[in-house]
Length: 274
Image 1: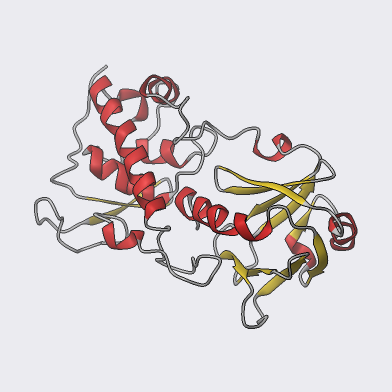
Image 2: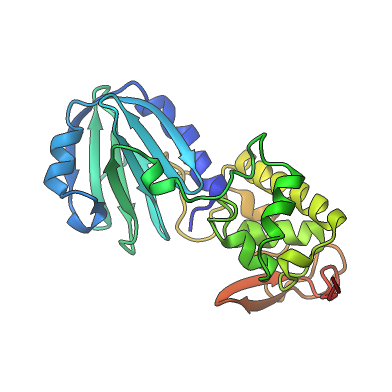
């Protein structure tokens, strides 16, 4: 699933092509793609509207429109947004043409992604936790959030209502960088561990954005290029491979039905009594 760095990369690369442009054609090939309204209703509402800005909130893209509405896109597992592709294949679920001649195609092999047209974006993203790259996100904020949850730290990082945008890959990478075992309880981390985890989260995310995201499955950038963040991964998707720090094989365990990759030596499980 595209996580914060992938969605931010998409936002950065789409913006110059679509911001300030109006919808001239809207084709919905899969009615299940559209929530909140019908496919024909969405088409009718979008035609002629201009995209005033493009934002990201967590893993959502928010197209702010001239009519005051918001078009919200969630790519889910396999969704991608492609600029001016060579053709439209059987996995295309929608296509949009803009006043500058640009085509944008929503492609989604597993058909899990959604688009919504709403009056207020907060109705969709209002329950998300804070943005981990925002200036307002501090070690104290992280400490306050984690103190409320007696659950594995890996599960806490994946909970979008606690922190927005972090998914499996970058939770694993941040925990490795902080040398914290994924099964440690979120509310039992020591102050210095929280400080280290805070910086690890931000460093891992900024680095991945700089690398245009990670193409480990179906993720591609709007122009069709791949991201390269996966080449810097230390544990994510590296089960059985040697740890870059100590050489111990990376292990994979299940944490609340989600896979977690970690190094058993660099990230020892040390229960803390509180």
